Image 1 (spheres, rainbow, N blue to C red):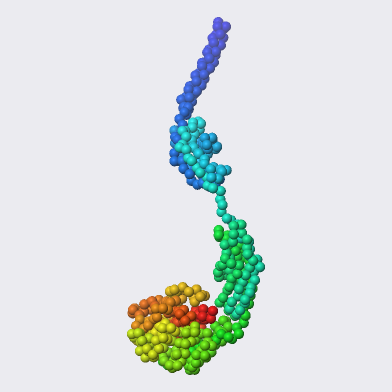
Image 2 (image 1 turned 120 degrees about the vertical axis):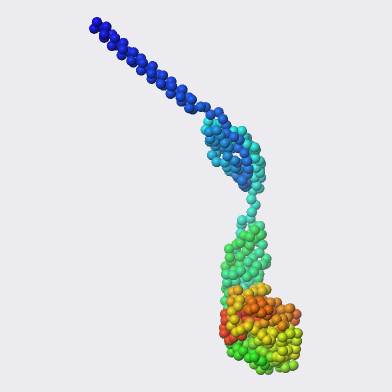
Length: 465
């Protein structure tokens, strides 16, 4: 009996062990089947890449791009084929081929692939033609050497230099005065005019080619112009036979200052005696009618002025000078020698100011602008030029249409004669002389105004050269 009970205990233990083994075996099979059901095999390829196009091309590179493909699980990347051979795989939708030959034809195609290595159909082929190898000229000419000066005077100098060299040829040379470009030439010499006597200048030159490549600047050459010898004379005429602005001293001081800088001699006349003979007038390079008014010269003196002009004499006039010898065609002008000497209004001032009213209030603020650019006459003046002046009216007066309007004043009021109008004009006459007029110069302070002094200085330089 005891043996039987022992046997039964061993049998029960054995059956329990067998049951556990069978249970765990069935559970493992169940997990395997479950995993097989949750991880199906991916046999679907991505869609074919579309829109393959060329983004850019050079002689040695080509950049291409395309639209993103789609896939049931996800696109892993793209394979790049050149001439049918796989050259690279990328993750982006663009690719740049390098190391290409210039002026050559290449054919590219793209496929998409997924993580299961399924590959799409090939895209449409893209033919690329690389550019020709660059032939741009990047070489600058050599620096000009041997810069030197010659023919130096008080107002001019010639400079010359040795020719530069270039791989394809020198196109020309740029000339710099005190660091500022003043001109260009295709020769190896250049003449410079309009200089101030007894003044130092620095010149340099560079060479350039057709591609715009520029050489280094040459070594500088420094020159000092010769001193003025007093051979150039200017007559300042201030006589009045009408309203007197009493600006003689201020005018003379201004012109004397300009003469010191430009190197000429100044003679002042308040009587008209300097006009008594043509031989006397002929010694003057310029006659400046400063705020003259009315009938200031007799018949013989007026004839001498015309003869002076016929031999190329120059005239500067300002403000009330247009109130002398009113032109016979001026509707609103009377007195002050009107119709007595039309030649004066036609050739010296180029205008006759109107009467009643003939100007704005004194010191009226207005803006002066350049109407017709002349770099010689406007050099060193900032425009628009805001100024205070007694601005003249021309409506009903006279303005010679042959004169070139240099400066114009802005609208100064509500009347028609207040409209924008000339305030400075000039003429290069047929007799080879030059004439300049400005309506500015009413008050004494004007003759020390920097902009006005610069304007008159420019006129003297223009005439004396």
